[in-house]
Length: 97
Image (cartoon, rainbow, N blue to C red):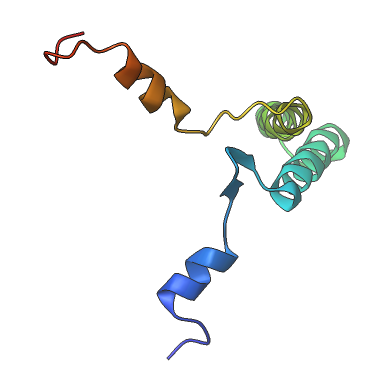
């Protein structure tokens, strides 16, 4: 048996909160991305194609962390389900769009 039940575990490991990534995930994505960028540039033992891939993947991870932090500051909710309410408001009463 595990320490936590399935419902307790899902409450603890929440990655999206209020339509955006949680704070620790945003910071982790940014820091890991920066580490991958500098690791891709600095490690001489890697082949050139792997260094380039690490650099580009790190840049993408860093961008996701940075953009999600900016979205949080601007109160933008990219993972919110509010579009469903707006979509229903445009439907006619007979069920057609």
